[in-house]
Amino acid sequence: MILENGVVRTMDPALPLARALALAGDRIAGGVGTHETALPSPEVIDLGGRSVLPGFSDSHVHFPTWSLARRDVTLDGASSVAECLERVRAHPRHGDWIRGTGWRSATWEIQPTRQALDEVAGSTPVALWAKDYHSLWLNSAALALAEGDLEVHGGVVERDEKGEPTGVLREESAWGFRARFGAVSDDEWVDATREGMRIANARGVVAVHDKDGWLGAPRIFQRLAEHDGLTLRVWQSLPYERLPELEAVGLRSRLGDDYLRIGYLKVFMDGTLGSQTARMLDGSGVQITSGEELADIVSRAARAGWPVGVHAIGDLANREALDAFESTKEVWAPLGLRQRVEHAQCLADEDIGRFTEIDVAWRSRRPLLGRASRRRLRLPLAARLGRAPRERLGRAGRGARSARRAPGRSAADDRRAARVASGAGAHDRRRASRRDRQPRLARGRRAAARQARSGIPRRPRRALA
Image (cartoon, rainbow, N blue to C red):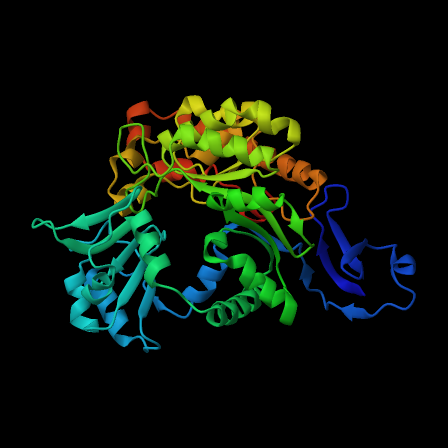
């Protein structure tokens, strides 16, 4: 197939633009000048002056969860409990549960309670996930299913002045409730994920690093591959708790084909900023996995042929994750395993350069932690965070890698991305020089969000990283 009469943006500095593109099966055969060798009698498509870009790879997504959530009550942008209740009341009801996602209560005058949901749902169980999926808001009917069994290690059960559950569960308590009572049939997962793939493809997404292994995502994607064919390339994580089973049967990382590969094990160190459970150096937050436990997991996983992806948001959680990778490097580095930290939102200055030194990839998606975060989260930590982690990571050296390589992506692709990132760093330095001319006190009071924005490459660059 040949695409011609358009603008082909290759993202290759040696040939950034081409007027045509030749395809041979699933492979790009080349640009202008390859027509004769691509196919004997190629199909030709006239682009009519339109542009062609490389597909996007989302390096952190819970794809089946996102797909299913599109069918639920949408609570994004709700400014109060009352607005959430109105959306729940107006949403068409299907099945035995009312499900929803997207609420964020840090700036609400009245906080979520089970009694509020009881007013609009009565005896129908309601489960509403927060925007970060680390907090779950339930009504009384849903809470009753647990029969008081809510407390677990690494979990939070919010209680009122009488010691009764308010209806909000966080971290392991929320996830444990979902595992026990919020089961969704495989048919529903498959149908929702099929529709999600169609939407993602329409937006230019062709590959994902999926985090829903603990929900059975490999089974969902495999069913789609067998019956409909996958239209996304999936780099799949599995929960580290599955390691004994993987060891027993001798399965190693990269098992699969070009469209579905099992890549790495996922571990949680702490919670999130939105749920105020990120583990910070000031002692706040929730510990889900300790540094010592992580070091043991990383060593065992490496010996079994598996890299580890660590969810770490707070500065203490990130420090302990880096400590664990550093103390076990002699085990995993000789095996060529690519370790990664998911999020890396809050970092102490002395830990930034360690990503390069230890050779750990970072994957940060939301590095804005200035005035906007203080207003949204009501967290004092945002006020004392200077430049955004992504900006500071860029200044730590070119060796700090971003974990955005899709299955089949080459080291050359990463080098091209690094060159683009270094160009963004030069832009950051120019912006920083202008800021440095301001008095320190004034700069400290200005929006740290403005500093953070200067550390985010523009969208085309970000797509490459």
